Amino acid sequence: MEESDSRHERFLPAPLAAKYRDPKEIGNQPCAYSANGNCPNLSLQHIAIFHAYDFMPQHRYDNGIHTTYFGFHQTSPEAAVCIAREGFRMSTTGRLMLGHGVYFARSFAGTEGKARHKGALICAEVRMGNVLPVVYDTLHTVSNSDAWHQTHDTVYYYHRQEHLDEFCVKDPNQVLKWIMIMDDDNVRRYGLHQAFQNTLFGCI
Image (cartoon, rainbow, N blue to C red; front, side):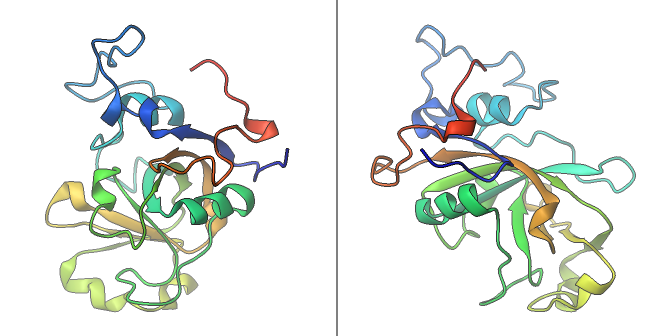
């Protein structure tokens, strides 16, 4: 059994995620904070299992408060396997609204309509570093470019609708750890019906 990147915590099959859990079944009771938010348990496993899909685990990014921030990413199962083994890679081609880097939204729901591929959902803890804030009128200063890499670590886009905020980091090593939900019918095809040796499933 091969090993993963040390930052990869584990894969979770989609039926374990909150989107698919039946609260009437024993062991599937929702988190007590599901209705009103502000849950104090900010472990990646807890967020992915009990709060994904549209849950935003933190308040809107504030440079004076957040040194790390939870980000949500959607990609294909094949790409997710590569990430689990080798870590994230920067996007450098195509239309890139925030320039070159690794992209994250504030929730899994926030990745819809933005992700180029589907089938794997990733919840990650990200080191923000020196952040360049942008709004709609200043997007042109960062799009399709890596010029901001010279002075900043992260671009954070304050969308007119807060839940649609997104951010981009220049260095994949800023992604400190992650957990993946495989929302795909062919998990055995990708070898994801069992954990890597160093991420065997334990108690939540």
